[in-house]
Length: 268
Image 1 (cartoon, one colour):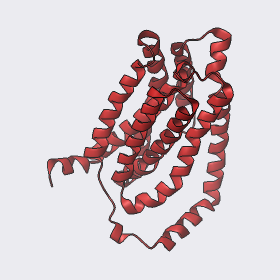
Image 2: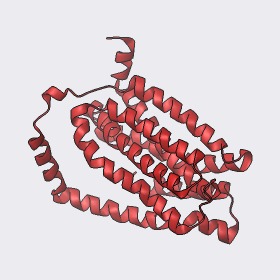
Image 3: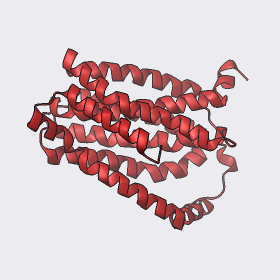
Image 4: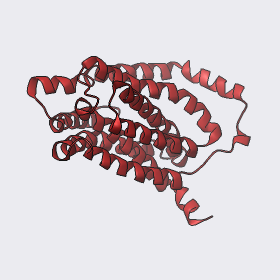
């Protein structure tokens, strides 16, 4: 084995790659929230912002199930690499976007890119941390939590001090690091020749989606996500209108709410 293969197959490197990917994805998502009203597209309507929020969820939902099925056959490395390219394209659309349609496309692709890591990345952690799977997943989620806390305030502060482009320069630097980690250090763990027939795969999927414990957990998560989704698209414009809040202030409020979520949510 070469030194690269030895490093990429080490559990700690797998955990670091996945954690950084989750950090970077949450950073990008939350960085955009306070910047959207100040973008060249001049999006100031709550309905449009809500549509952008839905575009992200739509992209993730459309990609999740196919990725969950195909990553078992194609390996984890390819979806991870595809994911970072989708995030790069979406960030470029946010940077240059002068219309609502480009922002919608950016959010949609961002959701699809995030779905790659939430399937392939976490599957890698589960594979390399069999005995301590819960602990490994917890460490990986620290990356996502940190990104959700840091993203809004960094994006808002950079905007206030240096303008709209500055947060994206920082984001492109993170994407470059993430791309190197995914391309060089993500292991490929699956041999397609050893996979069961498609009929067995679809039967397993049917058993999962009809399992009562899975359905009850999914319903509880959906309720929690719905309560958050009702507020997040509307909050930035509300704060700007009633308090003349800058992106830095809006970002700080998002950071405070994410910190509260991290400290008190049972999911963490």
